[in-house]
Structures are given as structure tokens and as C-alpha cells.
Image (cartoon, rainbow, N blue to C red; front, side):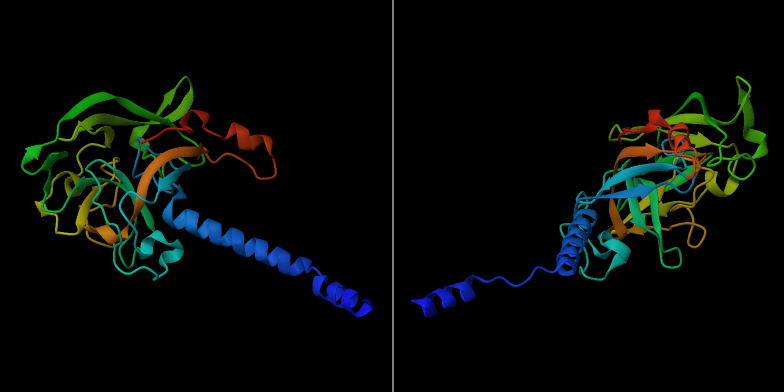
Length: 276
């Protein structure tokens, strides 16, 4: 009987817990969840330039949905070559705001608006987009005004000729227009005046498997109107990572990490929660 009790005790004995092992296991599981979430469901993205003004400001943070157009290696962090080609691929719609991987030599994430699909022709005439031979309606609306801030300083971001003041505060002012695509998608664009290299172009024929993208800040956007390294050229579908979904934070850049109350004063609260 004693031998049986000893055997049962030995059988039920558990190995000693290892806190280090459990901690490592927890972090591995967490990393896997984040990897799957960021690769296939939703990912954060921050706006580094003014090419998508007036919709997106420098200092905006948004979520990008990853399932809209299928998956490729560029859906994965750092473009890990784990997926062949494009899986479950679907074409974007004209007017979608998409995040994609820039061309070789300009290898970073970029955000622009899709203007042309495979087989479309695109041209700029006198600052107006001509889509498949038909001008896209362009209606003048109120000037776009953005306060000058550390994220949007005068001189470097706002050329001197566009600097102004409102209620004694320095701002940047641009002409603003509303475009409406044939599918009904409507959005605002900016115009800095005559810019021959951006406002007058030849006819682009969008190749199969590619899209033509443009920034809403038409005179300050390196996009499909220009070949790399100045622009993006045509963007292959497999390099599209996802579609802009909603803004979750925005800052004017005036916060000081060592002064926590400035984190709140620097936030542009009215921009949080804006969808696309």
C-alpha cells in the first residue's frame, strides 16, 4: 500500500514553475497576436508630410484596414517575403485613400488617393484631372486655412506667399476645390497656383495590375505623375497594404515629453474620429 501511495505522489508531482519561461511565453504569444492583428486586420499609420492636405495633416495618426484589397508580402511588417504574390486580391475603387509600399529606392510606406484603375487614362490640363477623356468636376470652395505650428512651420511647410494671419495668429492659406469622381466620391483638393510640371502632363495609361495615385495637395505631392525617385510612378496592386479607415489621434507637434500637460494642449481633438 505504501508503495502505491508513493507512486501516486510521484505521478502527481508537477515540475517547478519557471517565471522566466512563463514571461517569455507570454511575450511570444503577445508578439504573435500583434503580428497577426497588424498584418491581416488593422495597423496604425502616422502622417509624415503634407501631400494629403487638406484631409490629412502632418501629425495625424490613423488606422488602416488590411483586408480590403487582399494580402501580399507588403501586408506583413517590414515586407517579410512570406506570402507569394497577392492572395484574395481585390481592386480598390477610385477615390479610396490607400497606404502602399513605395517603389524600390523609395522603400517606405506612403499614403495617397487612388485616381486611376487598370485601363484608365489620366491627364492633367490646367490643374484639372482628365479621367478617360472627361474632366473631373472641380468646384471652387472656401480657402483652406491651417494654423502654423511645430508640425507645420512657415517657410519649410508653408511658403512665404501663402502665410497669413487669422485673429492675430499665423496661418497658412491655400485655394481649395472640391472634386467629384464619376462614382460619386467627393473630396477637397488644394491648389498653389500655376505649377507647370504638376498641372500640365501627357496622357498616362494605367497598366494592368497597377493603380494611379495622387495626393490631394496637388502641387506638393510626389505621386504617379512623376517617375521615381521624384514620385511613385504606377503602383502595383501587390504593394497596396490597406485602406485608410479612421483617425485616432492628432498633434500639432508642440508637446514636450517631459511636460505631460502639453500632451493634451498639443492634441487636435476635433480631428480624432474622422473617417474616410
